[in-house]
Length: 426
Image 1 (tube, rainbow, N blue to C red):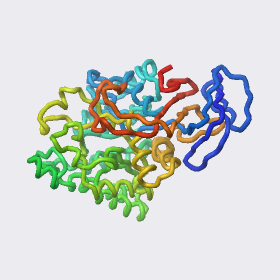
Image 2 (image 1 turned 120 degrees about the vertical axis):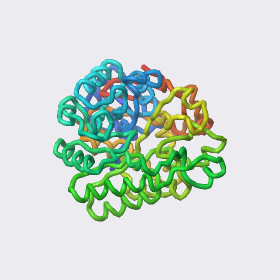
Image 3 (image 1 turned 45 degrees about the horizontal axis):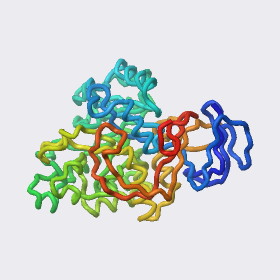
Image 4 (image 1 turned 180 degrees about the vertical axis):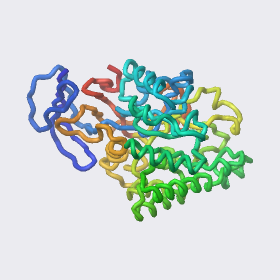
């Protein structure tokens, strides 16, 4: 298929330019002004920004095993709606992704059902039990792009050290769920004033910070890289900043909810604001923003974590952790970071497209001739009210209901195929 995008205001992480984009058979073949090539489809991008497709470093598609919450088809469509053309699925499914067969099942299913690129992460340990390394080599051959025991930390430091060394040999990143389980002590939200007022047992920041420190030390000791995911505390940001100055090979991400909300969102026992790590306090929120600004935090991931209504419509202590994030991530980043904190749209491209593709070693993150045509169009004058009931995702567990946003993904092209046109699925 041949597609011509006219009057494009192209935003890459390193530059802006006005040009037309000519796409043939999934590739960008020309980017310049005044193109008049023959096309099957012409898209007028006047008044919109044209960006590389977003890449989510961290999401949960729940397939296999928990398809009542989400599956590859609905999850990928939800991702596309939010502007993501590539997503990395976490391995805490049922069965867990700790062997070649499960990897092949997921990627084969994604090939048939997904409207975006699905990349799969494998586990660090067999069965997510933290006792024995998974079949990383075989899973790499089957197509994984990273390893992680997300949902559970690797408590055994010796095993984590071996995992980092082995993964480095395989040239795939280790994504660390930084949490010390011995410090949770039955907590259900951030330990602080709000938890005290609600009468809910809190989780100390030390649970995250202790494990962040350990994995930084392991990276420094072994000389191998580690990626810390869903960073939520001020001290964790500072540890990562200091480690980077010392030359430690550490990268990190945070999520939109950590720079847009605090634990006050849990007031009224709002289970849609319950997540892991928990929402923290204002000083932590501001530290996340500053970490994203100065490069301490390299990227933004959604941690899209769908749950059935019944798993949230219960007592706060019993409710499952997590929120859906695909369809609000870019709008939140634009509102909180660009509109309220002076970031440039190029910064969002870097944080949500270029840096994730760079970490994973996958194509994407930049619009240029010869590159894959994963492209999104953004309307920055499109007001909309967040209504989780209208989400494409099967699950509706979002704390952003009623928020007014000012930017909308209107068109999505994946591998040269139009997936969404004028906000409607093609």
